[in-house]
Structures are given as C-alpha cells and as structure tokens.
Length: 249
Ligand SMILES: Nc1nc2c(ncn2[C@@H]2O[C@H](COP(=O)(O)OP(=O)(O)O)[C@@H](O)[C@H]2O)c(=O)[nH]1
Ligand SMILES: [Mg+2]
Image (cartoon, rainbow, N blue to C red; front, side, top):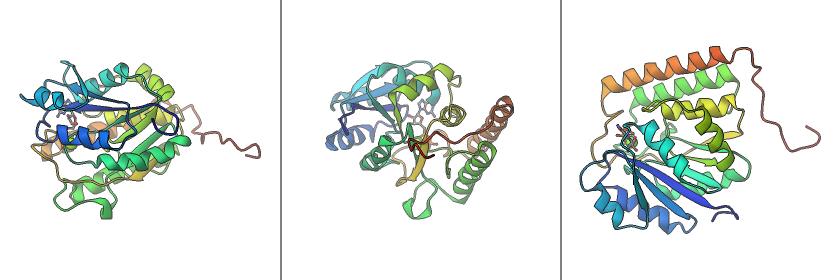
C-alpha cells in the first residue's frame, strides 16, 4: 500500500529473461507493492522459471506486442494505483517512490528518459533518440496545450484505477506505439498528468525495438502520424487545463 492506496506493478516480458527476477525483487523490496503481475508475451525460454523464483504472478498473452501485453495486464489488476514498467534493466525500480509522490495530485505520472544527467553511461539514448523523443513530446505539448512533456517513449508510469478504465475503453494499438496512444488518450481525456525525470540505464540483453535504427525511424514516423491524426480528430475540442481544487481558481 502507498498512502492508503493499493498498488500493483505490471511488467510485460518478451526478451528479459536475465533481468526480470532482479527487477521484481527490487520492486518487492520497496515494501509498498501489493501485486506484481508479469505478462508473458511469448517470452524467451526460461522466463517463466525466473518469474517463478519471485513473488510475482505470471499470465500468458499470446497476442504479440507491447500494446497487447500492457492492455492485458491493465485488465488483470485491481488496485487503486497501477505502475507499468519494463523489466529489461533500463529503469530503476527504486524510482517508483519518486513517481508515487505525485499520485496524490495526478491521475497519470510518467517518467522521462531524456534528461541528460539522468542518462547513465552506455544507455540506449544517443542524441537521435534523445532529441527525437524530446521533439515529438514538445510537438505534442504545443499541439494539445497539455502538461510539460520531454519524452514520448518512456514506459515507466503510474496511473490511477479510474483512469486505467478510461484508457482501456479507448485503446486500439497492439504494438510499440501503444505507449504514445496511452499518453494521447490521457491528454484528450484531460487527465491530470505530470512527467518527471527517471534514471535510464543500459539494457540487459538484446533490445527488439529501439536497438535497431530502421525500426526506431519507422516507430518515430508512426508516432508523428498518430499525434497528427489524434489532433485532427479532436480539433473541435478546446484544449483545457484540468480543473483545480481551489475554489478561487
Ligand atoms: N519488441 C517487443 N517488445 C515487447 C513485445 N511484447 C512485449 N514487449 C515489451 O516491450 C518493451 C520494449 O521492448 P524492448 O526490446 O526493451 O525495446 P526498447 O525499450 O526500445 O529497447 C519490453 O518491456 C518488452 O517486454 C513484443 O512482442 N515485441
Ligand atoms: Mg526496453
């Protein structure tokens, strides 16, 4: 429990056999997580054995892709707060404490991997990825007049239960662009959102998305298309700031 609220962590897995058990143990050690759920998305052989050595429960989702795995996970948990993260060693589970601090005020707390002094040596965040993520985030921020954003690809997030329902009702994408779709749904629904820097480390094992330049460029273009499409669809709606609790506001 965190601040009187139940908390789960959803970890999709595809190619994280050598890091997943350590990541689960570190989330456990924080002492605030009630439920850790691993979504096995046709993962590397040996992953289930690693998960079985921890306190996490595992379910299998055969529909392939990051979006399919995360949507399945969000449907399976039933806690006040839901954290999603990647178990590939790129994120510090300990940073969850930092994200949780903002949940008293926000429905969506998103990490950012583009803040230079939080990027560790050897992390897969060269100038192209860093600038690309930042540029698409700023494009989004200006187009939708939303929260201050600096990264569209960070998959370490905490979301409130009510807002997860809204996200699931509107989710469509099964693949890697789903992280952005979640953000866009939150922006259009005018959820109260904040983005804060998280540590970003080198990955354990082989990346199957942004480790490949061609895949990164095509994902980037898909993301830009999705941003523009969403903005055009919502053009009649005036972007508004979330209501404040202050009576004077
Ligand atoms: N590539 C890929 N990743 C998946 C799939 N299903 C779930 N994922 C998860 O998506 C996340 C991103 O994949 P990763 O290889 O780390 O890409 P990177 O973060 O761009 O280096 C990981 O947490 C994977 O476990 C899938 O079918 N393909
Ligand atoms: Mg990764």
